[in-house]
Length: 227
Ligand SMILES: *Cc1c(COP(=O)(O)O)cnc(C)c1O
Figure 1: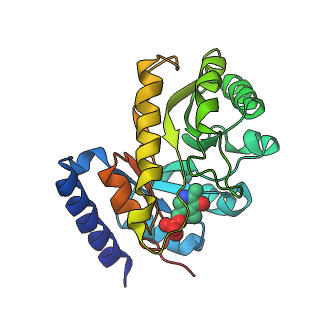
Figure 2: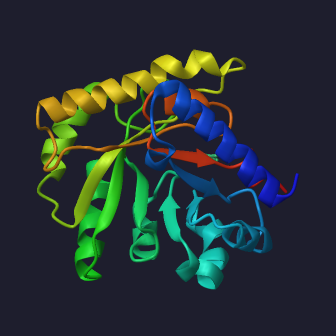
């Protein structure tokens, strides 16, 4: 399928999921994950009108960012090594993988030095899979209280990854769990500001994630394809 057709196809699926959930599709933002594709294809993604680009390694994103950086908003969605923070600050507007104090500290320090702010999602491992990064749900509240002191970080929400399930319906408890955790953290005023955003849902399961309240979905294979 061509880029243009894939964008229309996905927009239709997003619209339908929103209708089922009684939500407005304006509240669901699509991140085009370009980690599987070339610079040339990333250009096509931007030409198609998509503005949010997701990458999970600086090494892979570098050439794309250097060529196309000012045409989009960049989201760092993968595990972020502390020694890569310097490269990412000022280039990526959003970090979806804030999962430890040492990283929060380094992001805050580099943002301060660059006279910028960084929008962050705290990554939570709701499913409890060993292979996944992220805080355990019960660690989220003390973590938020601790990082509230880092004034160059704007913590806007939570992020999670569900396990791959042959039946996407089986991911629902993970997404619902993240939403309920977000609501509970807000009730307890855990963060400096209320958490409004939920980054959840990938190609296989974004429709379920939308039904459970996703405000950012991260789509690679279904939207951008693989090369
Ligand atoms: C690769 C990746 C995605 C997109 O994966 P698809 O299944 O191809 O949509 C989303 N989020 C993260 C964190 C990823 O690493």
